[in-house]
Length: 328
Image (cartoon, rainbow, N blue to C red; front, side):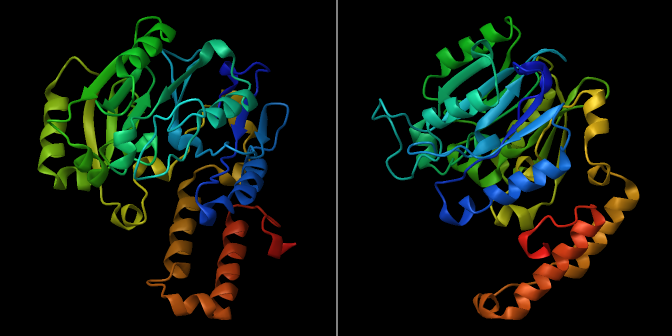
């Protein structure tokens, strides 16, 4: 996502991730594009681009992209990739899901000026330790970047370039490996936390409960809060075990979209949060989500029928008729 102040045409831009590395995920792209087009329909203010396509253009989307900024003006877009065609530096055990070519193509699609782009390679050892996305090893908000010391292949160069783009105001919080190992980082999803700005301009870290279950991570968080040299003043912990067991921490549960006041009015109104809509969605989840799913269910036509009934009701709540192919 590139907010309007950052782009060449002054519009909010979305680029759908192709997720090509994983066959079971690449089928998501057309539906994601359709949803975004319905939620953000005003093409005079916002534009949704289809997923990029081509050999060597494997893209994992927002999981490998961070926007940093010193205020409400234009930001710097930080793209992290796992491999590049002109180098053999790559993980040995696991596949690098993001290529430099894909990151550059996405930056082009989003119409981000060259002067607002920074590219960095993820450390191959981190990928081999299970860090399949940058958002498992780093998280950023405004001018703050919280990252493991093994997040990037060329840490000093990367931080210096980001600092230059932010006019010397980058706040880098580097977590040492002797405090939090790569294994603990992956297991706890510390860096998959949400780093958010509070109304008083302080920052809070929204963490999964696994961060407090880990002695090393919990100790580090206590020291982070006690350190007045950084703006993180609070840590909020939530039990997200069902999502965590499926590979998704707090950062995976949201897509951050920067909107100007006029842009908010252009969003499909039934997709904006209200207490009553939230209660309807909670009720919908309680009635339709199965308690368990076994392999045999996948061969039962009743599962398809109930799933379609659930989606019919969901699109009714969000006032998105005809969103799915089966509804047309």
